[in-house]
Image 1 (cartoon, rainbow, N blue to C red):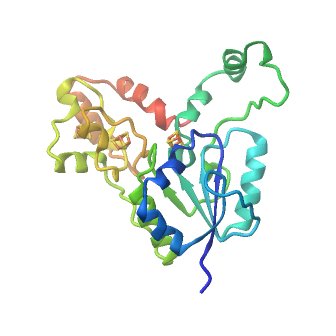
Image 2: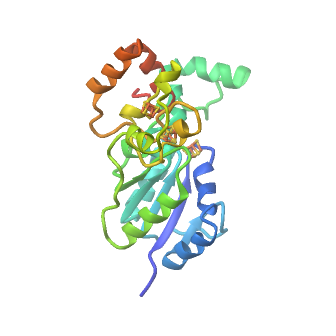
Length: 244
Ligand code: SF4
Ligand code: SF4
Ligand code: SF4
């Protein structure tokens, strides 16, 4: 039986999620045994317009990128958004809260008016084209990538947690970051990372995106108990969950 043809494309991002794929090490060989990679700039020099699954890394920051993405979408049966830049716009969306002229002048100085510099709002992939599967995180977890890809190849719906990071954090027996007078986004952020940041002594900054239906009331209750305000929370949300 022919292996599904898979193409990996990158847009605006640091390409750290693609790098995570190499961390599969021997597991990468398992994955490569199940698919035929036909385009993957970081790994092979081949390019192809014919593929079954398109994996998109990065956020969409220019009008020409939107056209490129739509073209990829037309060719792919399944589209997978890889990492926070692709699934939620990621840190690139910080740009959306500023005046674009100011952003251009700050970054490019005297070249700020160059015609190729776009003023488009930064978008996640699903804001431009339909996406079947999202692999969350900044960066993604390579084991989760392998598990999700195998589900997709088997024609199944991948199991992606829709409960808060707090659940995993409690299971690990961590002391809550609120006890350290910090604000943590764990109560409203999608689990699946094993509560990496609180376990490592940091607050969760929401890189896996918000839950489908975050329990905002419960999050507010936690904030009240620890004397924090919604503004404290909103400031934290800007890094990864800027809704503009
Ligand atoms: S999600 Fe994070 S690690 Fe992945 S490409 Fe974007 S910035 Fe890099
Ligand atoms: S708020 Fe943060 S530190 Fe506290 S339990 Fe939830 S994830 Fe853990
Ligand atoms: S704890 Fe939060 S910020 Fe850290 S990896 Fe998990 S979802 Fe991302």
